[in-house]
Length: 425
Ligand SMILES: Cc1ncc(COP(=O)(O)O)c(C=O)c1O
Image (tube, rainbow, N blue to C red; front, side):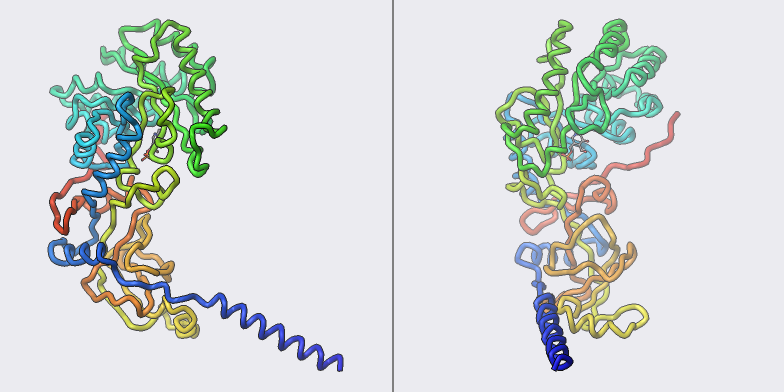
């Protein structure tokens, strides 16, 4: 009796486990390209170069720029983040549309490119560069662009870096504009509190021929994910810290209104509509909205950048290298594994967006990456699969010219910046 009960109990448990597993059985999540991606697919098959490309949707981008510019408003400066939009024609377009000539730069070769292309733009460094990078910048700057160097704001995070820059300025016989990196809660470096900038202000004040204070930069991406508004305590904490630095500068007789008081990024820019602490707000990625930017304050923005990758091969069955015994069982279990494709390229920092329902690939390859779908997807060899980059910086540099698309047509081709510059010293 006991034994029978045990057996029955065991069978019941097995049935329950089987039932639970059934609940876990994946559904068919596949769906073909919608009208938007079907049109892009047709366009790339007709006019694309037959290799992976990066596509920019001009209308979506314009709408995103307008949203950012509106959030910054007329009384503050919208500063365009170069690393997130690393193409001179793209930057030119965004600057013209947003009516700004302020840029934030993170890479010496990009700074040289910006100084050559937009000599009148105000270029704030987004990170404190080794003094050798500043020296390389001056060495690579053509004489006809020399004046552009006067529009650069060098980011300084310590007194010793300031002194190294001061020595460079003396050697070159130039005056450097100095913007102080301040820590408003991110703890990624910068001056930790108002008292810490005093000695640095002393050094600047004592050498007006070579140094001038141009502003403050306090970045606060740790507010991302809070869905925060201005009243949120974490936002108020950032602003209180920021004001502490501003007051310290004011107390030294410097009018902060004449300085660049920079902060924010795409994730957080929308918070500050009703606050005047910062007069200069940065954003880049929000213009094209990669997947990492599917965040609260960018909810109204539309994705405007896609990778299109040609399908090279298609099989109507799952094929796993070496034909392990479980390959058929896998495809039986998960309907999203029933068609196998290989694309041209792969393993980018990106996620499939169309066709729908593509699970994690069986393995990664930068040469020919596999992806699987259910039988609800019917892509032919030569069709394109589309991915959204997770970030725009770096990924945008991997495809050559950006294809600018509007109304089913390629309307422009924009070259991208070169990561490696000449190694001047
Ligand atoms: C100092 C600084 N400001 C602003 C940004 C914002 O750039 P994005 O709008 O592309 O996120 C960044 C991004 O890393 C940054 O480091």
